Length: 510
Image 1 (cartoon, rainbow, N blue to C red):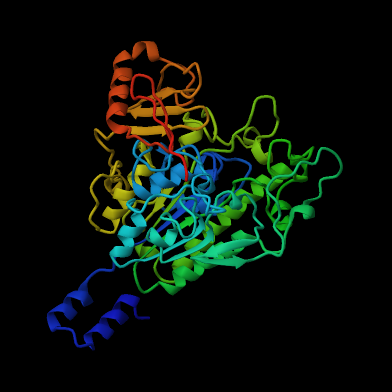
Image 2 (tube, rainbow, N blue to C red; image 1 turned 90 degrees about the vertical axis):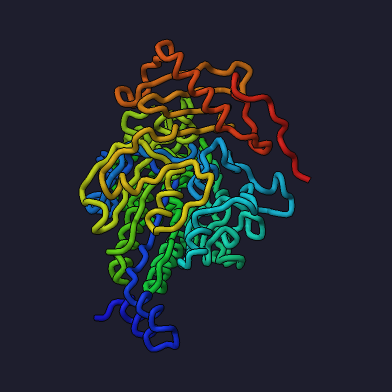
């Protein structure tokens, strides 16, 4: 069977192009494709190749066996929207336009759904790929600006967007609608709500099951995109919604897991929906996510493009957070039951390791050695320059991350890498700086009694149990100097860091 490149070359040779140009195009190697799969609130140890014992994830594990698994990769932020902003723009949280989960309607009342939008000036990695001629698609959850705003995915480099524009709407897996670009697609005649409490009585699974399950539509659209664009280079972004609560998987997925796991229902006491079998339901969401990874890799193989496609798998932040004195975490998740963070401290919403350290796997046949493990510290800001290097595209100025291409393809470590920075105004205000093996954390910055600097040697104490701040005054001074230099003013997401910056007046909507 002739390859797609050969077919294109034959067609070009029959055209009226100059012979020299026809020859150059016909012999040029095809540019690689990129598929970036992003889970939602998937904990560091919630898949098998990172130590998960209860939930089988054969497709994700196979991806790791065929590629490289990173053990010290960090998300852009400990919650959804700012993490995605860092990923898409290559700007760490000291420079990112979006640094928290803020609904657009609170600033721009003309929008009824969606998050605070990135600006017209913000440049995304998708825009770079689109300008270079790649087909660009996104299926899943966006969260960086409503349809019609400056952050609309169609205005940020995606030829096709299909899924949830608004991350709040994505809390239900049976929404009234999804978006195909600017078109609102009705998929259910009634929306299953995202938050209900049921203090007493039998919790019935079918009561919270709708007609059309949105994830099935999004994975099908991803498969179609791969098939449609098999003959040209593409960039495909797949921010799936699993395993973010509410716990909503179909019965057939839930029934794969032991009845004995669940001795009591979740009644919605800590947000989202009741569920009769919360442990089985949560495991089912991760199992379904794993099946999507299998379907994506199968689609690449069937399209004949797997050998020239970089596949990346990661998560936008750590496992679902809890609260003191409550058995279940938010929405009925139970990270303790699944050992979701292994020994890491903290969960989603925290700049401790459990909120930021995430799975990250890359597979690129012939370029990334199969079955390798790399402990290079890295984070979401690195992906913009990395993907530009993968596709041999010029990198724009001003990116905060560093390219991981040599790490992936040569097994090298980054020497003297830039510090990794997180400036997070939510959850009482937090900052973190990673300097070599030292991680410096400061909590409760938005309270009347801000916490002092904490310092941890991550190489020796990844659980962040031993604060060695008294031994590292120079590192603390260095971190403050870095933050003074690297934290730009952001009136929409202000955070006062004592000794670093002055109070800012929050911007208000009109």
